[in-house]
Amino acid sequence: MSDTRKGWERYCKYLCACPDAGVTLDISRMKFDDGLFAQADAALQDALAAMAELEGGAIANPDEQRMVGHYWLRAPELAPTAEIRAEIEQCLQRIQAFAADVHGGRIAPPGGGKFEHVLVIGIGGSALGPQFVDDALSGPANALRAWFFDNTDPDGFDRVLARIGDGLARTLVVVISKSGGTKETRNGMLEAQAAFRAAGLDFAKQAVAVTGEGSALHEVSRREGWRAAFPMWDWVGGRTSQTAAVGLLPAALEGFDIAALLAGAKAMDARTRRTEVRQNPAALLALMWWDAAQQRGLRDMVIIPYKDRLALFSRYLQQLVMESLGKEKDLDGAVVHQGIAVYGNKGSTDQHAYVQQLRDGLPNFHLTFIEVLADRSGPSIEVEPGVTSGDYLHGFLLGTRRALAEQGRESMTLTVEAVTPGTIGALIALYERAVGLYAGLVNINAYHQPGVEAGKRAAGRYIELQQGLQAALAGSAEARTADAWAEQIGAGDEAEWVYRILRRWAVDAGRGVICSGGDRPTDARFQSRR
Image 1 (spheres, rainbow, N blue to C red):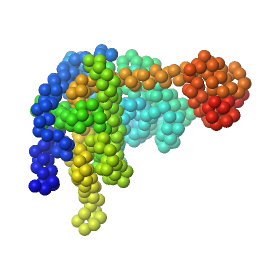
Image 2: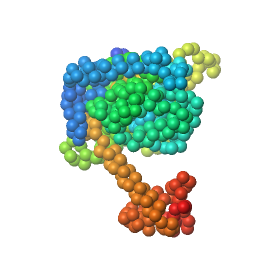
Image 3: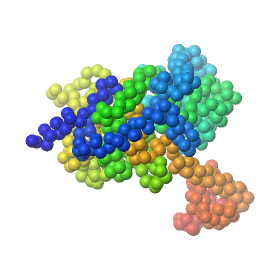
Image 4: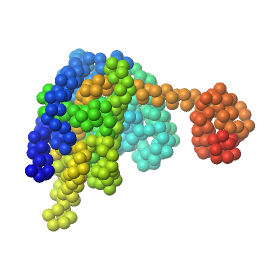
């Protein structure tokens, strides 16, 4: 029997078709045997049972004593209390009513007319999900055009503001921060406020908050009289917040069908509660990751969507997968160093970028192709007799899949008919559930992120050093080395950071620092320009 015939038979045997959720998963090009399902069934059933407990309201984040309830967002009837159900339903109604009032001009810019732009200010899950959905669903019929402040990069702020230009007067700003204390988001808000003041505009009359009840941001929005505030609940994590106000409000303002997005996510949730592993695409994904990575995350996850609209999906999954699964210790306290690195491009760009390494280089990955059957909304021209550009795209997908299989490289293929709000919701829910099930298989907590907090604490120390240096430079005109300045402020062990701060200030004209001496860190001398 030929290899292609064997491949066809294996494809038919292992294909998981989910018409109820609009997704088909092909695992046939992964190198497993039938015994894997029996070997892993008990662990998978335990993981599914643990997820059912989470959906019932069990504590998932012991560090903060929080539940994990993003599944309730698209099925409020499953919420553990009537109060939570009412909050979810009321929030969705408010989002839809607010967006309708913006589109209808009932909520309008102070200068008249209608809002034409929405500037979303957030970081991590408060930006990656909205950006992915915007790129996947946007088109010329958008009600508002979306822009993003998703970093604390001054040049990045300037670029976005320059592109908005005179449209700032017709821009609604959505500031997203659960605690209200996230520095990147706070900085973006302050930069936006400064831009509005410079343009003679009242920021508060064009601002909306998405934040926790009683947070610093909530208090600012209330005190300054912002247009509205929508809730962020402590039982929804940033990386799973696309079906909360975090993602739904920007999507609704852009004019996307958020009811269809929620319905797609709900259908996938229902499908992925199934205990028959062969009929559960999230369980199959988790099992394939577990087997290919030798149960220890030893292989990277490559995501290649063959559709421009899904180009940001790999960036979205980087946070969802890596922040959830990158853990030093398991639930028993043992050091395990789990995690799966995620990267990706889009087809067929990948063939001209890194497929050469995937085929002939280190076999340290498993790959997921994402196939979209619909080429476009209308008919296509023929680029050759009987052949369209979309035929080439599909041919490159199947050709790359075969070329990798010939070299023994493992891949899966996810297929959807078209990129719609419903399929976007389904894909988001599929990977949310797969991440949770994989965490169950390897006995880790997918819902806390101690490493992120460690980085924030270190950044706080940087700011402390900077403030000490500012005071020391203001009190002396002497040129000194980084070592000398570090000793001056009582931070002799932090000479490298002191040098890097001073070197940056010497380049930034606004800081008033001069650098002289040699290029070596130990030779460079820094002094105030005053």
